[in-house]
Length: 312
Image (cartoon, rainbow, N blue to C red; front, top):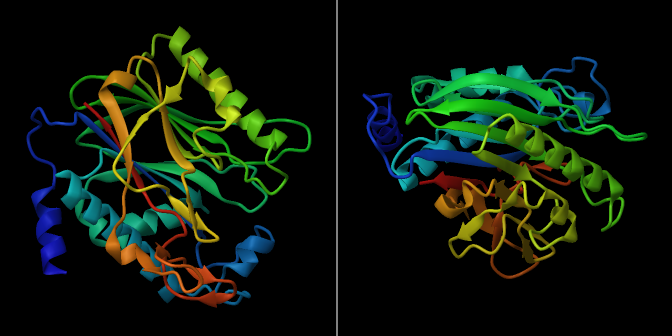
């Protein structure tokens, strides 16, 4: 704990200087990160509460907050500084975000958050943390993904000014899952909406555009052809094959797409904090340690690994 605190204190805001990379963005799907209260928000809200089926108590909630904070600090030690922004998916509400910043070592940082409630049936949303000393939030809004019969997460748009004076439009995504089939029309609607937002930003002069999140599909999917040429797949570095493991196979579904202007000077990588991993009892190797295995609480953070995006 003392070592982690030392790393943290060394990264507290200091006079800005040119750094390499100039912009650092992290993303992680936090897998059903509900608060522990039953606020009458539906079946999932009840299930993930102290008196619900999952027995999601305040203690377990606080442990998950601390585990996420530890992941952010580990990332900072690996990258040389705290991420300028941290995008997240599967957050229930602002109560969760506020507790992450107030009840963990992240309270020593200058992170603030952006969140809007979406119409998702499970009550989970995208959100964004940003360092107020490194990033100025110029504008934000929730971009609704709409179609008949579709209720899903909004795309969170944040228009930022970096410490180096660059304007960056950031779009946080959590596309619908594949439970309706590999050629799921719901994901096509969400991808089309993302393309529309990116095109609109380009017309307004936002050349630096970055879309990241859980896209619930692999980067070679025809689904993403609709994004081109407004957004293209960001170069992936590192050896890790995927961000989630399913039936013993790694799948890369947590992705980053960037505008042509950013493509030559950006890359992303799947991070593997060792404390987020556990042995795969069914298959060889390791997998991310989840919060629950079925109905049983096992105390992990998520079934997803985080990604880091670097702009040079």
